[in-house]
Image: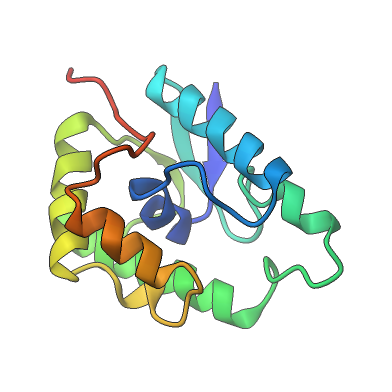
Length: 143
C-alpha cells in the first residue's frame, strides 16, 4: 500500500508524538505512522494528503492555503537537497531508517526547518528534536 503525504508533512512526521489539532487528527496521524513503520510506501503529493483528511471538515481548514503550499515547496527543496543533492520530485518516495536518521540530524541543526517557520507547532517540535526525538512514533526498521 502507498500513503499519500504532502512534502512538509515529512518534517511533521519526524517529531510526531501523538499531539495534534484534534483527537480525530491524532488518531488518523497515528494510523498513518503505524502503516509507514510497517512498510507502506510514501507518495509525495500536492495539496491535502491522508494526514489532512480530518482537517478538511473544519471550518477554518488551512490545508489549501498558499502558506501551506509554500511550506510544501520549501520542504521539497530542502529535504531533497539534503538527502539526494537536488529537490525531491512528487510521486513515490523511498525512505529508510538511515534516511530518517539523516533527516533527524538535519532537523536538529535547523538545516531543513525553513518550512517550519511560522508553524504553531514549531516550539514543540524544537523541544522534541532537542530531546533526541525520544518518544516519537515514526521509527522505520533497519533494512
